[in-house]
Image (cartoon, rainbow, N blue to C red; front, side, top):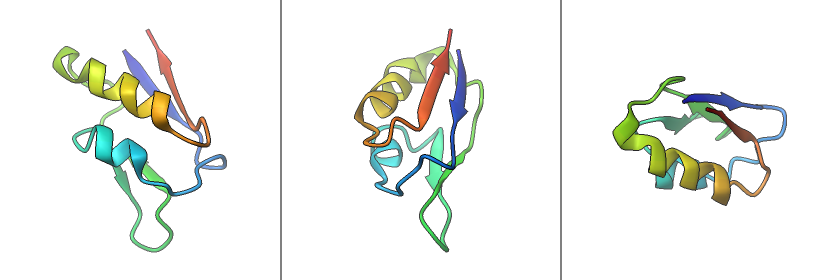
Length: 64
C-alpha cells in the first residue's frame, strides 16, 4: 500500500488524523495534512482506507 496526498485539495478537516494518527498529521500553521508514513504497515491498512473514505476533500489516494 502506498498513500498519496494532494495538499492542494486538503481542507484541513482533520478526519484523516482522527482515523489514522500513525499515518497522518496536520501542519500547525494551517491544518493541512502531513503524511507521516507513505507505506504504512499492513496492520494500519484498514485505518488508512477509512481515512481516505472520510476525507471531505478526497485529498487522499491509496495505491495498492
